[in-house]
Length: 178
Image 1: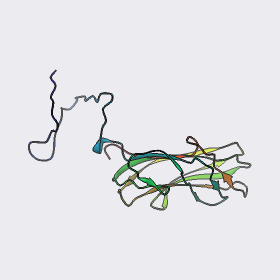
Image 2: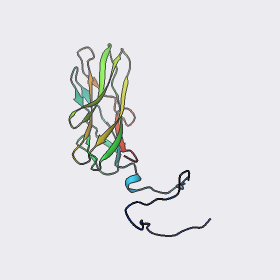
Image 3: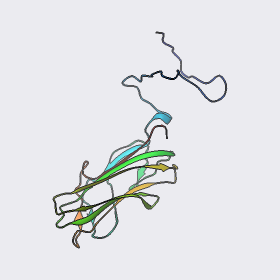
Image 4: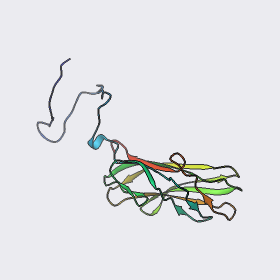
């Protein structure tokens, strides 16, 4: 096996470059960083580090106040605006303080200020219930944005979120090949 040392490979003519043949396997060694179009960026993970009150029978935007990471500084003002077009995978989890009675509880993934997807669950009286949502969304980049909202109708009362990095979070990343 020979080693070829170069700084850049460009096609001889046109704009296509083929590496290998059908059935070949390429190995990317441990410690190698993949950048550019192959990277799963922009990517972010934010969470709620303090309680937020969720009013009864009101759709409420979650106000994330802490970041684990935000590779492209694309999460601001409680929304993600990627700046890079593509397909994105999002997931979010919300945990509320104890439900005293059975309640309808919903979590929403909003795109550009409107519901894109929703998950609803009738939650019985229980301590600190949790609800989650995941979906894939095509975003155009600089003008599309994504947010998380929730709704609960627990016996005419407000509920507080159960704060913490693993209790209330929102994350997303660009999918390779999008």
